[in-house]
Length: 415
Image (cartoon, rainbow, N blue to C red; front, side, top):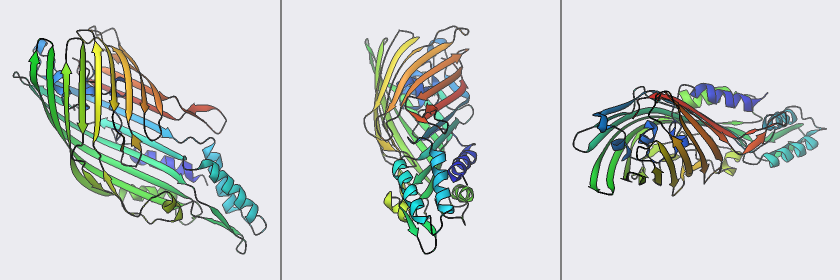
């Protein structure tokens, strides 16, 4: 029985209606970095000061808003070759052990688990803004308001390796090696305010603040590899639908941007109050204890500071942007993120010439995965972005494939 495949498919099918990846940039900002870009509405969601820059008052506009999306999906897997085949072999060794083969089966199973270590996992994230969000309104007296709403999810299935022991008398193998599934679904509503704080002949200082209300539902399931009485798919579904724990909290973000004709620099402080959310309880075993997984836990949205900078043409048609998270934080399933990103983009004023953007992004903590990123904008409104992981792993056929990938599509109003 290929429980690993069952775990992965159950996670994906259960979360398919969820949205915006937790601790992942939104839409085209995955390519562009966190530096606010007037031509890309998705970058208004990173720095709370950015909404003030997103409305083109030279054309007497006061509003800017999303239409559909961005809808984003990402997948990531551990650095283990032929994982499906290896897990299936372990299961066969456990299921088919006899008094005569128990010792040899045990040694082979432990050899495989030693190779797998703690890197056997599959992680999926999905995301979508609520239609027509965000909505930005800029007043005529140097102030702007933003209303944002999204649903977000991250789901992760891991193999927790533990020693396999031989019960010679019973002619079977025993182990606490387990499948561990985690889910987090976040309904988020944000309201922000930004304004011009000071201006001279060289540029303008814009400041902003945003409050984000989170309703976070978290689920967990732990299924032993040798447990034939529990179906992994049922346990995972129950962890999300019946056993998930929901709680509510508010995160406060602050930001500032200095904007000149040809350059800008900014800083963001996200979740300065570090809101705390309830985690789902589970019954632990030896494998869970080995990996430091407790029976109950809390999730804290830790404060993260980000610096960003960009140089551009006066009309922001061509921009070189970059951003860097100065500290690592954990997402709702315990993975660390600290993004460094750089990009170059072109957004023309013609509806018929597509906008182009390319970039590089790396997680400086946790998995330390890196991405090559690419995006296109059609008719100044339709945004499609793709990121491909530069780290690879071999599949069951021995072919190399990226360990991670990200795709996004959305349609919004133009600057």
